Image (cartoon, rainbow, N blue to C red; front, side, top):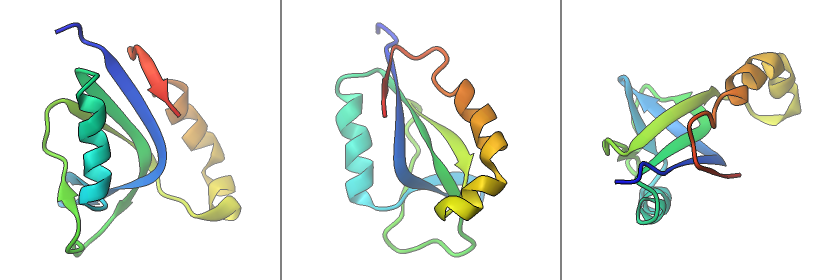
Length: 103
């Protein structure tokens, strides 16, 4: 393998449930699989919200080629303003070691 890594930075959300990451639905997961046809690994840099009760459509992300890089969850500019500096620190190095980034 040539170890190409794509940082996929989206306005979609990761779901965290019982310490594991989930895609919102099968359609979202299919997007990740499509990128894995080209890249050896992908890093998902996405907002992450925790769910105590897992929604029916959620799909477990259990592929070792997918690295989850969660960003704290926020909605709208007011919530974002409260965590602006924290998000900035996380995003600063989110693409380190990656050969490409899809923004």
